[in-house]
Image (cartoon, rainbow, N blue to C red; front, side, top):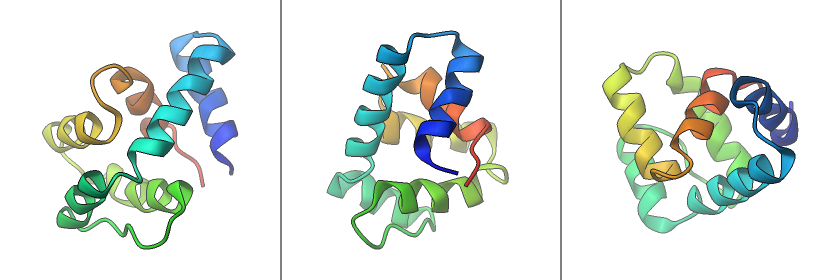
Length: 97
């Protein structure tokens, strides 16, 4: 499944407009490629090889369901920042490859 479909699921959960969701996706996709974020994810055992945000998010999704709530919150803050936190959580909780 592509990231746009995942954001549609986020829209169903958050009831936010397409513009808000589009901005959230752009933000999350760019942040996941930041070197410090990638280093953090790698330290958690998440594969960050390559330059594709989708592959990094796919790898994160593989681990997401097994993470504790505390780990999820920490990862969400690092990856999405405080402003996109709710949208990121909604995406990861409903993520489909």
